[in-house]
Length: 132
Length: 262
Image 1 (cartoon, rainbow over the protein chains, first blue to last red):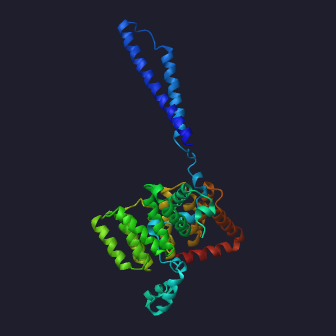
Image 2 (cartoon, rainbow over the protein chains, first blue to last red):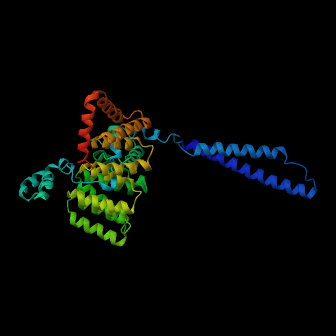
Image 3 (cartoon, each protein chain N blue to C red):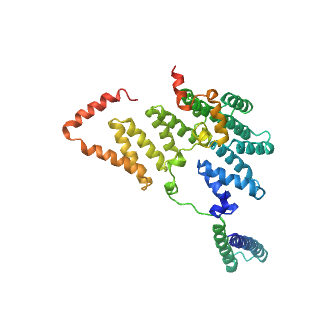
């Protein structure tokens, strides 16, 4: 859904912004601590909570944008693969198969029948030629 | 004649996605590709954007399969206009020459590409295919071996070499090629199963043992692999038929036969 993905994109955006905001607040708190010389105070809890929550929100949003998950089991993806497709090597495709003749349109057939003597040997005889 | 979109009630996006699936999974259903692709290009060409070029390539190769030389030429010309100096397009025009059985011209084409770019794997593979098409299998095998010495990771080429060896009945070397493939794809049950079949064809006691193991492995990887199940069944059948007395005779016979097998 295109609508849904922009919602999750919004969630990720808000999460990242909140994370940045929390980081900025933490830095500001640190400098405040240094100024007032109260080194023993820990980060205020709202900053900690904001960091954690925004992190979770960002992760959750990214998971929804990331797309389809693949199976952990590497072999399960191949369960539906068959030799029909595995055997095809596109870089090595040959075109001297019967499709060249089978799909020929009728007009071409008539003209080729006339040039019968000019036709090269059919493919099945070609291998025998090499033996001579 | 009804158009594809009318017959199957699909929109152009579905047609495009189907073409992509066929392209990624190496389907060679050329008639369908030509029907769907031709309609997609002629009616929805403008909506496709940059996808159209790869679809032109896919449709052109399918058109060569279906003897649609007119369509192939159109696609090729469009690609030439868009990518004038591309080696990929030159390879396609070489393929067209191959389909028209003008092998010498095609060879010159590929040699020209290789002169400009000696590392171009596609042109080398097409030259090997020309040798295959002309029936010169030994030269094809030799060239492919040389290619694989340089480009060891090319899985397609290894599988092609194993097929060439099987056609020449050199099962030992075919098994070696399949071993390479199994090494790089340990989770692929189909390579295990094909290896087991080659070993079974080779025959001989050790090979049958090995064959049984690899059929079992293929089944472990995919328990729905019918051929592996059948292979296991055939091997088990052999085991139960021999009785104790003739086992030695059969073994001796197998030993003597192994002299002639590689």
